Amino acid sequence: MNISEYKGVFVFVEQRDGDIQRVSLELLGKGREIGDKLGETVTAVILGHNIKDKTKTLIHYGADKVIYVDDEALAIYMTEPYTKALTQITNRDKPGIFLIGATAIGRDLAPRVSARIHTGLTADCTSLDIDDENKNLLMTRPAFGGNIMATIICPDHRPQMSTVRPGVMQLFEKDESRQGEIEEYKVEFSKEDSNVEILEVAKETKQKINIEEANVLISGGRGVGKSENFEVLKELAEELDGQVSASRAVVDAGWIDRNHQVGQTGKTVRPDLYVACGISGAIQHLAGMEESELIIAINKDSGAPIFEVADVGIVGDINKIVPALIEELAAAKDNK
Amino acid sequence: MKIIVCIKQVPDTTEVRLDPKTGTLIREGVPSIMNPDDKSGLEAALQLKDEFGAEVTVITMGPAQAEKALREALAMGADKAILLSDRAFSGADTWATSSTLAAAIRKLDYDLIIAGRQAIDGDTAQVGPQIAEHLNLPQISYVENLELAGDSLILKRVFEDGYHKIKVKMPCLITTLSEMNMPRYMSVGGILDAYREKEIIKWSLNDIEIDTANIGLKGSPTKVKKSFTKGAKSAGKVYEVEPKEAAKLIVEKLKEKFII
Image 1 (spheres, one colour):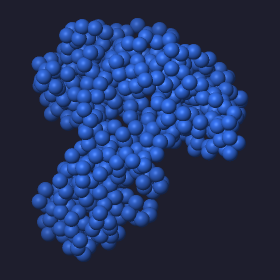
Image 2 (image 1 turned 180 degrees about the vertical axis):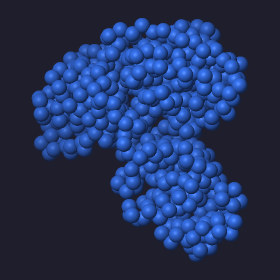
Image 3 (image 1 turned 60 degrees about the horizontal axis):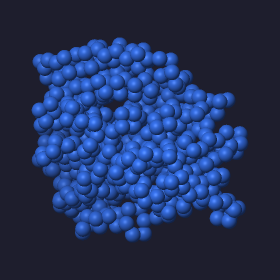
Image 4 (image 1 turned 90 degrees about the vertical axis):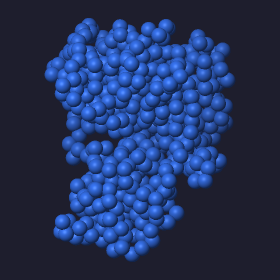
């Protein structure tokens, strides 16, 4: 493999029912930054059916070029047809870097592609950078349950592939005046490519909660005491136009749905305000929220690790302090 | 029906603590366990065995100590256990690990290969799909439910926003979620059998056919450049005051940061 032949940053753009997933746009933003650093172009690759109208927006979010494959075989995500398309495009264009969102689709697709083209893949990265010395991609990810961070390189194989955790990279500011090239790429699909049969496609009817996109999170842990006590957290969240999230312990206890979970195997969040109520601060939880702009922690135990990352810590009973806070906020609003 | 279950012995990462002074991992006293997603995969295999009859083989690549996880699998009801262990395998990333495991699996008969979705020490979720690619098998990952339908499986494959019901003809590889079931406990008889009657089959590099360029650290496209613990963010102020005063303090801070 002559690695000097491999150039450019490719981003896999994931769509579901035609909706571009936010993580893909985040990766275009990061890809743009890396591309500028390397002096190389950024290409978005989108697969699906009837998706041509989605391509322009990818240019607006930072891509120089968009390659799209429009085929019925790609309408619903299936491992083999998607792998085939991405592998063919990779073999033709020889990108230096390939970024994929670490979603339930990306984490199925990326390992299959990397195994087929024999290159390295780094999972679930939370930070990407370029080594000034040799231009290698530095891929940093949490390991050991989020207890340590590891920086991974892929020095002798290309493309350098990475899945990236949703919610950690910044969006490129949308610029509708940006121009770029749009190419349709054709892939021949055979019957054998559809090696599984999708019998049913179901959307979860549960209320859609996306704590990664909230600006304010009121987060509850074991110290909340019981499931019903989450009501007062919801009230506080409403007062601050935010959402309720939770630690793994209370999700495991069934007090609140898993969609709300912050931290390892849950979600990474970085809202403007994170209020940790009765959360002691297990290492996985801290890894999931410590990038928040302002962290306020309320806990009975003055030795709780959450205080190590909090900007403001209050030692006390959340079931007394939160209602007082709601009152105080209402009063502050009235004074305006 | 022949089922192979890939398992991994992992440190129980929920038991790991950071030394607040040095910021380093306290590894002492951290127990080793069978990876939870793998254990649910094994349980799924054992349920198929209970209902329809099957031969369940567990395989792991790891150091000699990984034998303990295999014995546990035997005690739960697995029929055969293979320990793939050789110094030449060490330092492998997911590509080299999956190549090695695939080479071992090629020596076996199977209808179904089950791997846990991801291991709690690495969290990559890559080895299962990569084994499937090396063996040229269809893969279904993130499986939460499984039914046998003749020579096929009907699976519930979950996503963040819903699920697919998928039919796939065997042979195939699936990766399982720990939400799938509650793994059974080892039975007393099972434990006795696992240690007295059943043997662990040990395979080294010489027992499998593989290009040594594809194994261990040397065969790994990815390398660890460095690892570090995150420097603790400098802590803010901690107050121990009455609720009313605490509320005032927080509101002041929110104003200062223009949140309200």
